[in-house]
Amino acid sequence: MKKIITTPLTEEVTTNLTAGDIVSITGVIYSARDAAHKRMTETLAAGGALPFEIKDAVIYYLGPSPAREGQVIGSAGPTTSGRMDAYTPQLLELGLRGMIGKGKRSAEVIETMKKTKAVYFAAVGGAGALLSKHITKSEVIAYDDLGTEAIHKLYVEDFPAIVVIDCKGNSLYK
Amino acid sequence: MREISVERITEAIREMCMEANYTLSPDMQEALNRAQCTEESPLGEEILSMLAQNLKVAKEEKIPICQDTGMAVVFLEIGQDVHLSGGSLTEAVNRGVALGYKEGYLRKSVVKDPLIRENTNDNTPAVIHTEIVDGEHVKITLAPKGFGSENMSKVYMLKPADGREGVKERIVTAVKEAGPNACPPLVVGVGIGGTFEKCALLAKKALLRETGEPHPDAHIAALEQEIMKECNELGIGPAGLGGSSTVLAVHIETFATHIAGLPVAVNICCHVNRHCSREL
Ligand code: SF4
Image (cartoon, rainbow over all chains, first blue to last red; front, top):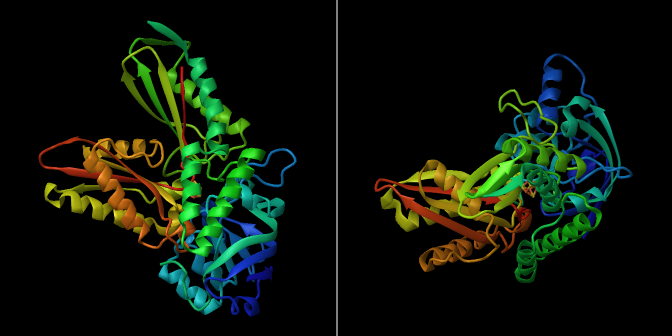
């Protein structure tokens, strides 16, 4: 049975999700990958503000391919999440509630997720053409100079994902 | 002596960049279909059916199969009786890549300096491997490589005493460590023998083989089968979410090596194992 969830993602929702749940996500999420994470961390270190409300936000580890004329976005599947592990605990502490990506996470990320009641979803890697059909709006809201790595505000509808690590630290990956 | 203008190489590569990123070769599609028929986990099967739908959408709407449209790896087999005219071959190849990635709305994923990390914005330079062969033709193979799987690849300098079992163990371990990161089901390219760099190149070339085609030497073909079986017993499955289809094929290439060594390279490739070839 598919669980329907919407963003912003609240603690009430995440505490009811278990590793293995198949979900459908609707609402605003934000794309960010390596370079955007590095810049967000630098911004915070310099005392600046993040480019979007991090509390109850969902980040999608994504660097899309360019959109053709008339398309919302190009191919848009997940990238490997582990590369963001170094930056993630700080964002979780600030209220980041959900992450969508693929692949394993560090012990430190999982520990912080347990503490802050966040969840980690997997989207199917290498299914970017199909996943792009679930993104109905896309707008670059920060770090335009980073090209594909800029932060995009995305509106997703019925976006398919699977809970791989829940807020109790259970993991579906072996 | 046959004269071939480098412009034809540019043109071929431009087209191939798009072709490789919108469609998989028939042998890869068949391997994925076979996996869908044999997958034991219901979730695994559902993921494989999503991958099949993804390939359909990509082909019909010319959307890249995966947003990571890769770093362009180009193999050139140049006949020794060919004279390439009209400019620099390297520039011709890179021009083809730049044109193809722009026109095809493919992602530009290459940074100029590995430490400074500024995007070159046209996906160049390509990694080019040239080989001089007999004859008067040029064969071009383009293999855009995504880095989710490239990052999980390995080179091991084993000792001769490690032998067949040692080789097998390392390859299975590499697949296990790659797990969900490399977007399984995987194609595993292996190079055994040669030197440090030679085995890595063999592993990369092994990915170009017709998927599932066995090695011509019976003892290597048997090793491929054994490794594939062990990998599929790991339970990693499609997208790493559990199942029996972890590896679609194991392709091993070998070369003579030194009395003191047993180099092994494992080039992991995701289910988006893209490559296409043209002959001029
Ligand atoms: S590993 Fe392959 S399928 Fe996965 S994101 Fe990279 S290119 Fe795409």
